[in-house]
Each structure stands twice: as C-alpha cells, then as structure tokens.
Image 1 (cartoon, one colour):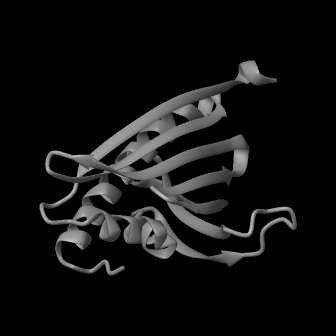
Image 2 (tube, rainbow, N blue to C red):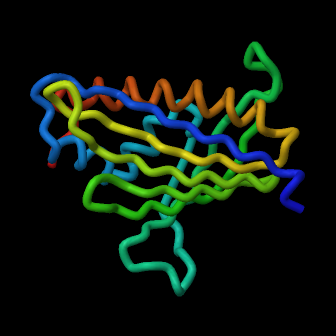
Length: 161
C-alpha cells in the first residue's frame, strides 16, 4: 500500500571547473562505469541483461554497495541492486531498484552555470517509511562525495570525450 511508502526529492548542483566543456561533462555522465565507481559505497558492479522490452539505448547493471547500518561504520552489510542507465542529449537518466522496496529515479544533466557548466542531479527516492531516514542520510553522504570526485576527475583531465 502506498501510504507505507515515503518519497524524497533531492536536487544537487555542482559547478564544474572553469574551462570545462559541455562535451567533457557529458562524456563523464555517459561513462556509466565512471559514474558508478565514483559512489564511495560501491564495491563491485557489472553489466547484466535487461528485459527484452527494454529500449536499445538503456544499459543495465548489477551493483553491490557496502553500507553501514549503524553510526560509526558499525554493522557493515552488502546490498546488491540493479540500475538502468539511459543516455540522453543533456545527460543520463538512471532508475535504481534495490531490496526492501527502494526505487530511485535520477536525472543527471549538464547545464550552463556561472560562465562554466554544472552537473545537476535531480532525484526522486521512494522506499518504505522506516527506511527513509537511512536512505536520505546514506545517499546524501555518498552523492556529495560523488559530485566532488567527478569535478576533480574533470579538473585533472581524466575524463575524455
């Protein structure tokens, strides 16, 4: 029943280093392996087959994270989930399905900002009510780090198009 579920919207905007081109920023977002590996929770990932009716442009991955169920990095646990990445003209759309009813729908895009470009992450997270505090805290921490790491890789010239 839907009243047992909670939804949380997240929008994060990171201005990229001066001189970053739109093409470089898009190359980073279209590099699914890079984007996945920038998440500090990820311990492994790999491509999987998607449903037969999946759009040809959509790529499917199984991802495994290490999460800590208690503060202070206590009670580590591994969780496997699937993600669908669909490249778009201005970025990438990601749909994530994880155990216990979690679903994430995220649009990563490149926008003009302050004489440069910015990466914008616009996400809707949906899960059972008791999980939402954990999901919010875990995703905020990991995605804040992802944005910093992505910006650093672009600044160091480690992303090519």
